[in-house]
Image 1 (cartoon, rainbow, N blue to C red):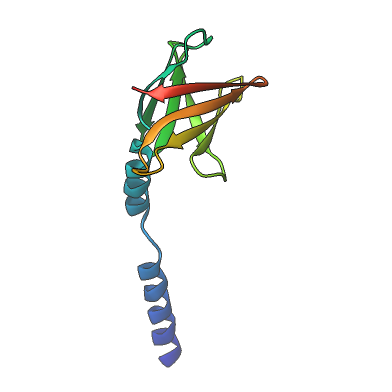
Image 2 (image 1 turned 180 degrees about the vertical axis):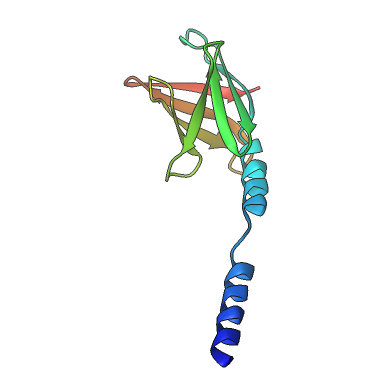
Length: 118
């Protein structure tokens, strides 16, 4: 009886210590919203606009009107890799004082393009 009681207490403690998926998804969704919005590239860039959206805990990016691609979080802070055939790597830029996202740089096919958040 004592063994069963100890086992049940152990299971309860693990359940309490483990965050639920719902809590994690809500937190992730809130964090992803900081990246969402429209971004405009510098004049002469092959891409004019880039739109970042969040849906069900996932981040997506769309260059001009070429279709959405999932952006996969990378180990480096504020860095995502696109699932597009180009495999571009996007690193979001934050204001030093406010920590708000103000733009990003995109490494694509040996070039780096920059965009400012609208």
